[in-house]
Image 1 (cartoon, rainbow, N blue to C red):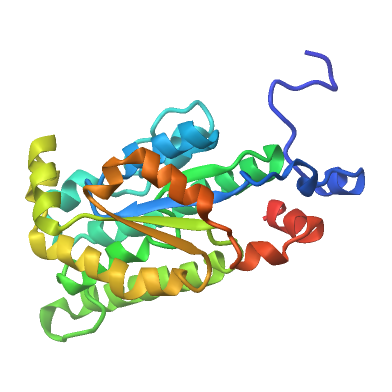
Image 2 (cartoon, rainbow, N blue to C red; image 1 turned 180 degrees about the vertical axis):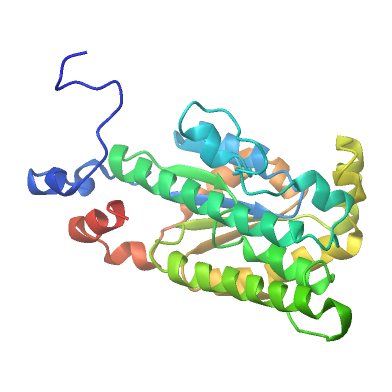
Length: 286
């Protein structure tokens, strides 16, 4: 390669903006961010993929704990000690493990979802192509809430022999909220959230059918807490920032109807309406 060439695309920077690159030139009515949310095994992947295929959007599968490693460098997962030091399988097997795995898992997942959401926005602003994600940084907290409600992580110090551990967990939960507070405010919410409302008994049936020996250990109470956080906190909060479409398990099977509903949405609310090339530039510089 010559000295002025590179196999990788140059990262966006100040000079791009100064030399006239403008995101709005590429924007179309399909330049939208859609997130598909719902409980474990609600069918998010299938719905998201069908939406992307039908509307010509880019599909981002749900970010796992290895998202950063798989999309950077040589694309190979790091040893657990260097990749968040957490395990989803261990969480399912022993969610109350006193080594802090449950908290580290959710904290690390948030970081990977944050990176994926940034990648998705960068793709939209660079190409004009809309994106569809399975969950996002805006819904990540439903799992932390469920963990706390089930006693997998503790927020208050209860004294006794476990005092030191409880103080540490308290600080970690506060740490999660602080990290979320100072990061999520920098990013625009999705234009549209699609929520798949699948009852817990049906979720459990699908988990059993899937056959993952670790995932099969998840309790109905944990799944119910996830659903409660979605319905009581997430959906009301997001309805003030973006459009919401909700479907039952049966309704979500009709991809034609889902696509038609999306095309009828007018997208007349949310902070995206106030954006211009200057604000898009600052977003891309994050």
